[in-house]
Image (cartoon, rainbow, N blue to C red):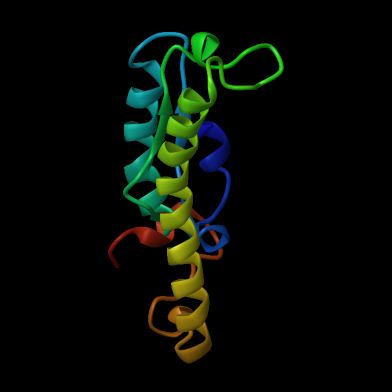
Amino acid sequence: LLNILNHFGSSTFGFKPSAIVSYSAGQWGGTRAAHSLRPILSELGCLPVSAMVHVPFAQQVFDDDGAVVGDENEESKWISYVDRCLSQLEWWGEAAKSHRNVVDPTITSPVFTKSPSQRNAP
């Protein structure tokens, strides 16, 4: 994922909200990767929301069809957990869209059009 992100200029992601969702076969693999991704998204100009979704032991959480394993209570817990992240993403998306209609952020903070080296000081 990081290799792919390095091929895009920040203008692709600038001033856009983002959310991070990770999963792993173990307890911490996805979480570590997600926390490493946050500063990279920020450097690209994204606005990552504070709530992330981590699914440890994904093979125990979801069945082969992608449904949550367990009863309705278990599914409700996961929906509530994911909804926190999605609610923040939606809020920031609406806020960014509304404010972009008032002030174009690229006027005072122009996007990079050539290469990541444009982030360097003069």
